[in-house]
Length: 430
Image (cartoon, rainbow, N blue to C red; front, side, top):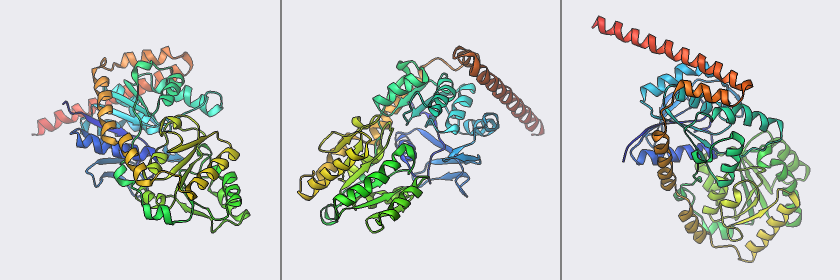
């Protein structure tokens, strides 16, 4: 089997916690186990800058880029060239694999890597609409142009694939569907707590509009009023946390709605094992890893029926799906509570065994290998072809992307010339 040298690039990585961060970490681990050379490139987190080695031997470059919004770095394009060029050359990278539509770092690396003649792959973890202003901006400025020169694209669900193909105006033949997975050995149930703890509903996720934090504010007081003994545990942080705190204060639910704040990933299992039901209120989702983690811990999932979520778990036994309407979700939660109290929910150990067979990272890594092989077998990247493709996408932003690409090419040429001159000078001194 041919071994590759791969750079996984995203603004979202450890020590931050989230679905994309977890995906990159475990994908990198499995690719290392398969014998490939893998590095991760992300921006610095506080004092964590420079080169670090994680406990699994993974080498991570924490580059000193400015963070501007929601964990994403400021896109500078030309300013990033020396950093990416140096890392790609030092590590002899063959494939640049960017993650997340929201990551400016990923899109910059794909553009620079392609102009350096490297093969590029992009994984889209998100779903977007087509009508609102932010979606139009992202679809036009980012996906339509950023992905036009990417060799292969990976989506985490079939719904996500259709969405990405339409948004990015991509050729469906270069888009593959590879679902997320979890390390089920890290998400095992605790049967004693499951049966003996009071009825507990868990929510773990970012407290933002897209994750349905507003729905939580409506759901929690209604469920607590209808069922006097159940409680909620909420893990996560974000701009909507203030509204949840206000709701808890208004309805005097301090003892029944526990707010944990941001959780490190190694604490997720401990929290999940305190409950029997997991609530997911996302308004849009390509693939929700948190519901798979919850099911692996034996919890029954109640979720909104959006995006790729219906593809993730079998309905009824594992998950109850409802439209993103507070009343419907309240009804589904009360039904799940009733089943829990009458002993009708599936045994947590049995549920864990079934989930373990559905999702595993080694399978995801092997399927990703096939995508890398396709990328390397495709036509070799050409700077002229890249510029031509930008032009074919439309004159307006096409000219902007062509201009930036030309600037990057000039910068790369200057840096290459300086390196050659320095090498010659060093040789003469020897």
